[in-house]
Image (cartoon, rainbow, N blue to C red; front, side, top):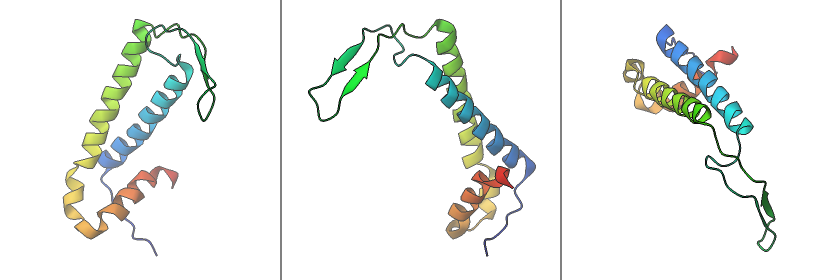
Length: 108
């Protein structure tokens, strides 16, 4: 049976926000054009797989700022979660299991 961990509330909240920020960033990047800068489209059919991209209008300054804001917050949260004082209470051999458990705590 898997060990259950008594994660502190701030660590749980940080992990949950990290999931949310990553989902929001992923959704935003899927909506944006493939290139940050305006670029012509291209088609490469000579390689081992066909690659095609339509012309990209690039990202607006607001879109670039939003991506940067989300990436910055993602980094802050990842650092917070991975360096939290809770991890010093867990033996080195159990940290991977505990970290995996934290990543899935929101599913419970």
